[in-house]
Length: 491
Image 1 (tube, helix red, strand yellow):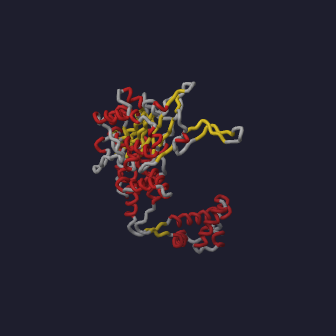
Image 2: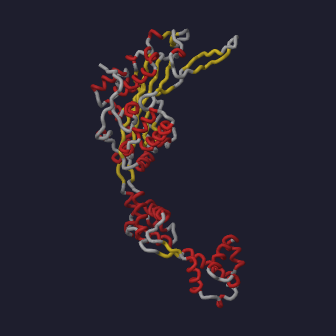
Image 3: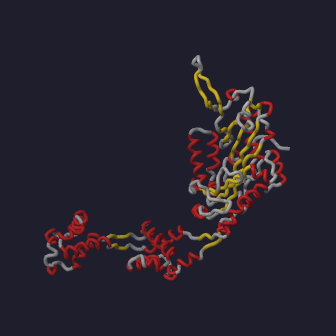
């Protein structure tokens, strides 16, 4: 897909002169006379009569409207370079309202860009030598379809550690906007990046929705397009490989940089963008051929554990964990007495547990004297019954908390990552056996758990197969090539 087009449109020679310092400039016109939406002055002062004088006028980077998203542009009216207008836009976005997928053909997008510029800036457009328009950069994007956005994140994490002799990792933060960069954006040949489309799409939709609420008609049109459920579904699991192809590369390969010559060239070589993209990324994909990626599906394992826990609790059950804790305090009182136990536990914890025993019906005087003559105390079975009646907890059928499932899932991942014997040494015998029993109640056999680590180590495939670019599936089956609304045809 042609995802971005950067054009340079020169001013007609009849309007250009060269000053004494060898700089190009436009004569006979003032920037303020061109109906530009914004003009800045780099020098502002008052003359002898107190009038404000502006000098060194400049046109900053600006945006002009289209049927959908806006185009970036700037008028470079003087300097070492020939005066020109720079125009930059995503052809897919201005033609169809989104760049989830789109066409490889340059012509329709370029005509849409020129048409909107002519409509918005007719005076300046009339000063341009449109036939000499140069293509400075073409962003070419193709995607791999993964199972879901979680796999996209996993692939990006994997790619962050990849570099080759000529393709190095960018110094830009690797996690910036769900994107991995390779090399510098200012390099003279290719600017490469890989990102997850769904994340970017949702961020753009939020931004356009805010603009639409402020009565921005173009944004409202974009939101209408981007809110299509089928389009949103198409973005899910897309891992995009975007390559900015600079004019330097086109010249190296004897491909015309003149826009209209390039359009004719593409008619004769319809796959030239695909070929450029493949050539630009060949070294990266060669490096990936020797790499493997693990295939694990943590979400399905977690969901299985949660559902099986709920199924296992098909009947009401009684939890005695709180009662056991309270009764342990009772026995500690009996063994060491109030004063010693209060010192050991601290006041807050001691009085909380002492209050719990009072709730069970024990008299304060009885509890204070528990350690004096234990043989005269109530037998432990009777005492426990008092505590149990007060603090037993009924667990309703089918209830299993997400916390229980997460804890058990964490234990499962430890077995997978470190191995059965290693994990067993990290837990007490009782804890380990209890968690193994819980996993077995969820349908995992003991043999499966014992071999989980070795099975997972073998559950890998080549990354180049995992992330596969299928050029025949870059657009949906019902895709229709977009057409420009401007009738600027090329012979």
